[in-house]
Amino acid sequence: MRLFLIPISTRRTLVYAQRLNKITHAEPSYADKASAKAANVWFQWETGKAGWQRWITDAGNKLFNRIPHEEWSLKSIPPLSARRRDGGVDKQKIEVLYPPSVIEEKNVSSILQRLSTERNQIHRTRMIWSIVGMPIVAPFAIVPVIPNIPFFYLLYRAFSHWKALSGAKHLEFLLSRNLLAPTPATSLESVYRPIMLRMESGKKESCKLAHEVMLLRKGHAQEIASVTGIPALATECERAYKQVEEHIKEDLKKKKLE
Image 1 (tube, rainbow, N blue to C red):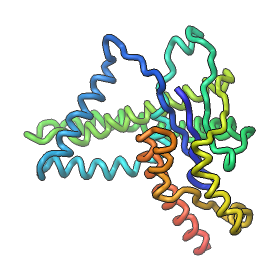
Image 2: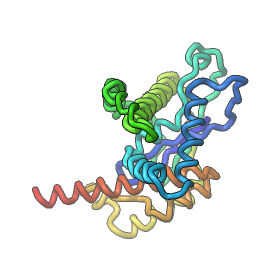
Image 3: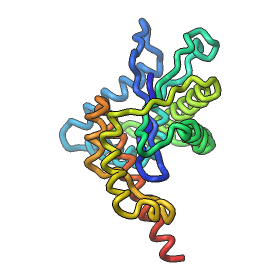
């Protein structure tokens, strides 16, 4: 595994974990089987003809896009294995790739520390409420033909929050054991260096001090995916870009009203 730090704005950064050597187990876990089954069913519904199944997937995809990008990024980090936790694997450090024109090496650990802890209470609380809500909506299963969508949605959200918490716990473990190796990434620098040069030619310092400023634009998502060789990063970056841009616009509106 290696980590990527992708600055979205002057104040918000996306962390993404790339699995380099994914181990194939002889017997997949129940969670893996359930996830694979759900993904297959969702794909069939999504590509099917118009109907209630297609309507559900369209509505579901809109809901998924509203899930905070921080949650998606933590979910990319695999849960901490018992072998690693107990010292049963080697102590080889994990690379943390970042664009040096935006992030200084001395700040890498503090950024990761913040990302690994700032939303833990939210994930823990919402996971509990999702679990509590499942028995309440369980009676909807008596409705014929249509699956119990509220139940499965709460099940998914509980699992999603658990995955995010597991990723955060793994990241905290790596930080506490000093198992991370910050590494400047020339691939990311090819994207961010022109951005920073444009900011420097304008009003970089004043903008940075006054309010949060977007670094990425919509087209940068595909560019980052291309230079890193990770297609999945396009979706992650585009989602983060949309959400952060919306947050910045809302903050500016609030400041104008004050």
